[in-house]
Amino acid sequence: MHAFHLERRMTSMLGGFYPTGHLFIMLPSRQHVERAEALLDRCGCDCAGVSLLTPQDVQDVMHLFDGHDLLLPSVGTEEDTCRHFAELALRGHHALLVPARNAQVVERIMEALRDVDVSCAVRYRHFVIEDLVV
Image 1 (cartoon, rainbow, N blue to C red):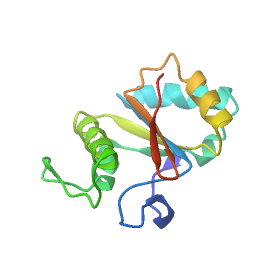
Image 2 (image 1 turned 90 degrees about the vertical axis):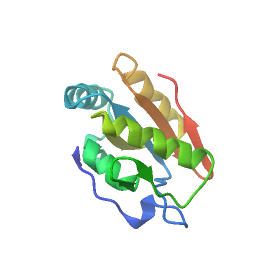
Image 3 (image 1 turned 90 degrees about the horizontal axis):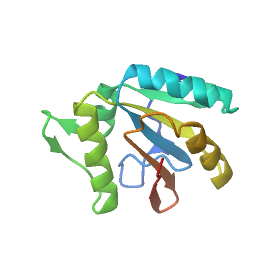
């Protein structure tokens, strides 16, 4: 697992956060992150490709200013999703950005994390943000 670095390929054409082909998984604390990393490693996930976002990283990525207002270039589900992430980050939640190239990988990852206290998890697909149930 490595520290998060925003890359252009993780944004939409309008500049919003949209990391197609990834899961964005939020967890309540650093301890939850460490447990999740161990479980992902155990299920065969290449944790070298996983990015850790601190609460501040999440706030920065979601364009959070002054702890209250989100300035987002999109509307609808994408905006609601970003607002939810930002609210969790304000409460100290961390996030993992996990590459997930297909539905089988997503299923394996979510199964591995079924006993972890996941705050929320979404899968970014082309033109679809899919809420995942743990």
